[in-house]
Image (cartoon, one colour):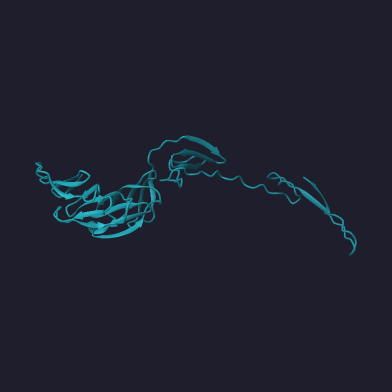
Length: 252
C-alpha cells in the first residue's frame, strides 16, 4: 500500500488498485489500474506525487507517471530484488551486493555498492544531504554516502546469543550470523561485524596464541626481566683433521 498525491494505491498480488479523494477524507471507488501478466506477482508498491511503481517478480520495477493510465518497465536488473523504497524523489532496491538507484522518481538508474555481499536489504531512507540509510537483514542499520561509500553501522538488529566464551583476551558471543568478538574488558555495545551477516553456517576462527621464542642457547626464552649468560667454546682443528663439536654452557 502506498500514497501518491491524492490517491491510495494497494496491490492484491496480481493487480494494482487505486482510490482517489484521500485529501478530502472520502475515498472514491476502487479502480484497477494495472494487471500483471504471465503469472507474475507484484511484491511492493511505492508512490509519490509524480510516480507509482511496483516491484514485479519477472519484470523488475514497473511504473507509471500518469496516475496508472500507462505503464512501462523502469528497471529490470534480474531476480532477487528486495526492499523497494521511494524516498526523497529517488527509488532504491537491493540486489545482494548491489543497490539499484532510480534518480528523478525512477527515470535514471545506476548501481551503487550495498553494505555487504550477502544480506537482504529491507528499507532505505535518503537524507537531505544525499546520504543514505540502509537496513540490512541480519546485519543492522547503516549510514553511507549517496554513492554507496563509507558505510558505518548505526545499530544492530536484535538477535539471540547462544553461547559466550573467553579466548585469550577476547570475549566471543556466538549467534545465528557468526560470532562477534570484543577485547576484554568490553567497553561498548558495538562489537563490529562478524563477516557472516546474511549467510548460514559462518565459521569462527579462534585467535592463535603467540609463538614461543627460543633463547640464544636453544632453550625457551627467559621470563621478562631475567637475563642469561652463554659461554661458548670452539676448538680450532687443522685442515684434514676431524672437526670436534662446539660446546656451550649457559647460566641464568
